[in-house]
Image 1 (cartoon, rainbow, N blue to C red):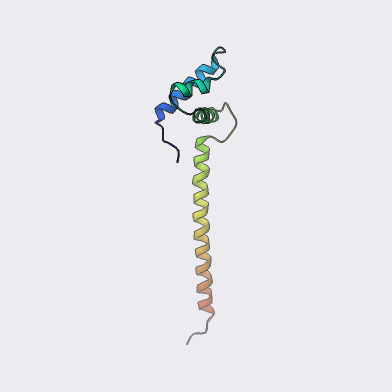
Image 2 (cartoon, rainbow, N blue to C red):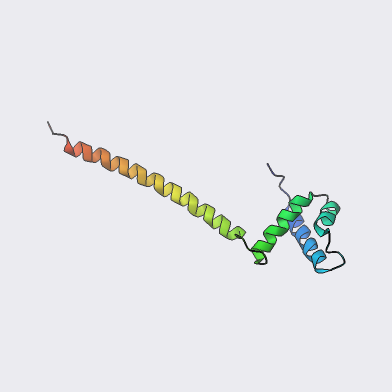
Length: 103
């Protein structure tokens, strides 16, 4: 399970990388250098920067907001399919009850 880092740390790391990338003198190795300064893994910082760029529209991809909405809709679809299956089973049961001869 991933280590939960504080949101402030994530925001600071992303901000520092973006600022370092804007300066041509500090562009190369910015993620690795800043990750080392903040005692983080470079891949973690790279993922945070990538996610921030997608959310800001700089890089193509599914934003965090869209991903959360998709997850919510998929959960709703599963629930509706389950409810629909229950209703189909119930209607088949009651239809069979109506077809039986009464005593």
